[in-house]
Image (cartoon, rainbow, N blue to C red):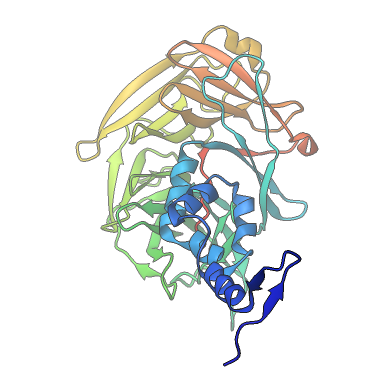
Length: 406
């Protein structure tokens, strides 16, 4: 065995380097120069786009950033800094555009935020279903073998990572009429997709072929689940603490008058009666301190306008007893001075601020905060959306970045 090569420096000192360099290189490939906990803390403070670049830097970083404990740490920090998310359905190029901005709390008058974080674009071909835990679900037309026409299937995407995953074809002979809901089950830490078809049965539109798919399994597959509650589902839904809630109609009515509940752990359905209609245009489901809340206009079914005078919040207290509590929020006179166009209810920040957004974007773009405790109206400007003048957006509150890979 040859002795290690030696270099003679100008000062006459001998330096062994061949063996040391190789061992050091090998050691550095398999460990970081800082403890793992500190490295994870540093990485968790980076934006999601920088995270994607770090995954590509080396195998060691890639392995660490894919670990479940790291993605949970990042999500925890992201939940502490929720964002506003603007989703544009661009029909001209058939794609969804996602742009985020900081989400203000208790904003001051004449304040603004900058929507300068374009997250991702995904091809659009069918309906948009909504989001849960940083993941979005939408419909897409896909061709399958031995089929002449395309079939609508759900697609899961993550705007923070730019990933999307097309689900397999549902257990059904129908090509369209699919309604899907995406939920997160916190005990098993699983994303699950609930899908169903609408069918005309005895002259009534009801949901049929209810089925569930669990993401993260080696082979994605649908499994049928039983639903004993005849209903027609709607696009109004939310996931809270492992339960999917969605508004539905029954008995052939076209008006939503009940809430379906799907427990993601037991995969069982139940329903809650609601004493009045839930118009799609003026009703939004919200998470009110961990309980389901129905936020709706108190005096109009045609939209939220400057002539609106009040809003109602119905909070589900006991699903088994169909028990709700009602809160009425009367708008102050300043509402008429601020609102100049038709608005939609974006949701609630905390338990005391209702947020509204224009249906169509106008420059300057803005959202309106109604503080129900102080009865104040605050207009918050959104900069960075000037290129979308006159376009429609969906505005989501409390969006959290999730770097978990699909």
